Amino acid sequence: SYNLTGWFHFPLPAGSESNRWANLRGEGDHVWDYVVIIGDPYTMEKTPGMYAQGVAVVAEEVAKGTAEPILLMNWPAGASSSTVDHYKEVVYRAGRSGGYKVAPAALAWQAAGSPTAGGGHPNADGAYIAAASIYSRIYNQSATNSTYTYNDTLANTAYTTVTNHVGQPQYAGTFSFTNPYLMLGDRRR
Image (cartoon, rainbow, N blue to C red; front, side):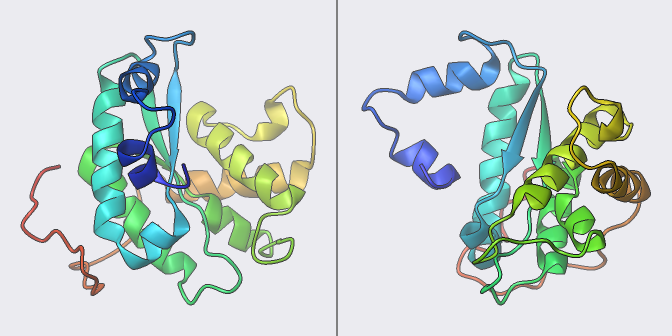
């Protein structure tokens, strides 16, 4: 599956839906402490209401188990016309609505100079920034304290970015992005 929609509506192999939901709840081979939800860039850019709804449905299922959902704020691909600010608003609004932690990897990625490897895909530095952002959000410390060593500067950039954004307003006013899936009548949190 490439995104949450595919994961929900086109699960393969056939009949795997019940196993997937049980897995999210930690009822399978693994009991999760955290479930990191990463949005599909196309969905976040073109139909952010579907992203928010997908987050709500997945997080609701995760909450039936013992894990805590964390939203990873990714960044747009190099050819995208979207911005990190758009991703920030979409992810932080979904996080605030559900009371979920956000790991602002895109902001740390920007602070580190936006490292990429062709087509906007993250290179090793970008992948590490995402992982260090998650680590920092979960443990409230720099990934330099983890047992994995890669780049202390990037780890500290991610930690500083995470701590600077916890509890701070990330957007103002109403969300006015025009798309066919605004879901304006949906007031569920």
